[in-house]
Image (cartoon, rainbow, N blue to C red; front, side, top):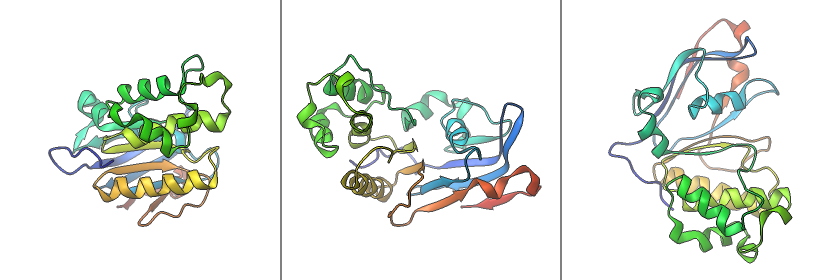
Length: 223
């Protein structure tokens, strides 16, 4: 599904961002500009701050220094508009065990303001339509992950932030998700993700947090 187009082309800007964890600087002086159509993979060694950066991008935490802007406005100052533009999928699948596959997918879609009319089609895309009325407590970790991924096929949010979306899905599922990311960005959306595996997605950019370690003592600008 094409990204829902805002009144102006989407733009996500990281302006001199520094993030800390437990009083330790993870990365600093990070500048990056994501224009409409940007697909950005965040990479780095374990502990470099990949998930911390995604949390900052979604407004779950505030950077120690610098700011993150959506449509050239700090996300802290435009919380409602930013939330409406954002689809965030964390590393842990937000699936409730006592609900059925369909109920979980509907709950997540409504939470994100997505189109629920495409529920069965979305479940088919993640190979979960046959489990539509099965409660999720009996599903494997990979199946629960696919239930969460179904919201991507219903979403019209222009900004996707995805933490390890390829975890626990098979080769066919990886190919489908790569194609979906390409379509989302081809229609003017923005996607920022982490992944431990090599991806085959046309036009993908890479942001390596190793380039922004505090000992480097310099500011880098990309994008």
